[in-house]
Every structure is written in structure tokens, then in C-alpha cells.
Length: 151
Image 1 (cartoon, rainbow, N blue to C red):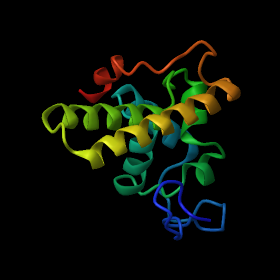
Image 2 (image 1 turned 180 degrees about the horizontal axis):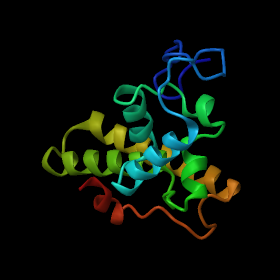
Image 3 (image 1 turned 45 degrees about the vertical axis):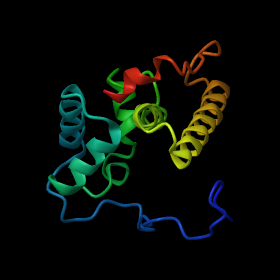
């Protein structure tokens, strides 16, 4: 299937291994991994940052295979999950960065198009998250307040 805005085709990035069991060479047990996840979350790390750190620093390739639940499920159990989904926050930051760029480069038409595309992605995602119940129904994306996320 073609990409949404670029009309290009292509394969998605890397693939997870088919085997869903934890490898035998992992040093950590499930409880230790959960403690690491809560420690990293209390430091202010996002779920994707926690997963990357666990993979690269601690040698845990898959928390789901080791613990039987995802990082976000563990954070929800411990009441450490963020109220706004992480992918939505990343889009807010991108919107703020492009908008800041357009303030100093008003004639950059490519960036102006990127701003429109980012805003439409935000609107599509918020519609999905409202349906799924992850954000309140009355929540609305405010373009004026979007600069708050860029800092």
C-alpha cells in the first residue's frame, strides 16, 4: 500500500522476531525488569525511551516476551503512565518546531505544507484516541498552545 502523503511504496522498518519467548541469555528476571521500568519512568523517560534503554544498555530485547506484558501495561499498573499518548506528544513537538521555523522563514512553502500535514495527522490521531477513550471527548487541539510542547 502506498504512503499517505508521499505516494511512495515501501516496506516498513525492522521486523520483530517471530518467536515470542524470552531468550535464555537474558540476565534479568521479570520482576527485575519491572523495577527497572518503574525506575526509568520515575526519571521522566517515555515508553519508547525505556524500551530503547532496556534493549541497548540492559540487554533485554523484548519486555513483552520476558514479562508477558508491554511497557505501557506495566506503567498503567503502577500508575506511572502519561495521560497524553506518546505519539501524539511527538506530533505536538514536531508541529511546534515547524511553526517556529516558519516564523523566521515565512516563504518556506515546503515547511508550510509540512505544517498542514502534521496538523492533519494530529486531528486524525485525536479522533482515534477519542473513540478509543484514551483522551476525553471534549479535548481539542489548540494551535496557539502547541508551542508549549516544543520546549
